[in-house]
Image 1 (tube, rainbow, N blue to C red):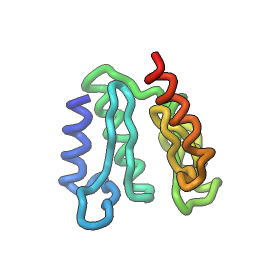
Image 2 (image 1 turned 30 degrees about the horizontal axis):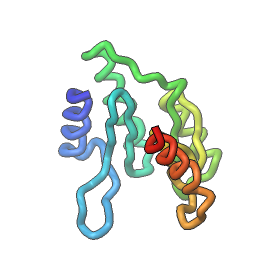
Image 3 (image 1 turned 90 degrees about the vertical axis):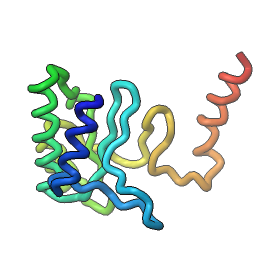
Image 4 (image 1 turned 180 degrees about the vertical axis):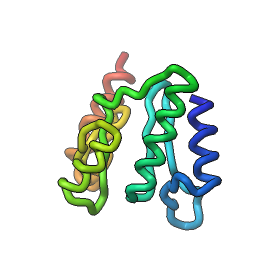
Length: 130
């Protein structure tokens, strides 16, 4: 995963992959890794997605590790379902929709609602009780 991190960082430095600027001048977010799980965040453009596909293909060729695209999803904020489906096909994966769970945490859910916190609270209770 360190090699994939280096490849993404190099692509960012060369302007080939554009992440998302976090408000208040914080760093640009482009990817998150946890063990063998990866989340890529980037500018919604065809070239950005194609370059990500190229980076992942190079990573596969150089490392022998292959992305499970059948488990992968493409999500778009402010994009139509049709557009998300078309772009997901570039990577050979499915279109995703909000909200979804990433590592057990809801993403895109309205966290002002108590019902969206219930599963997280219940998980903490079960872990703490043991």
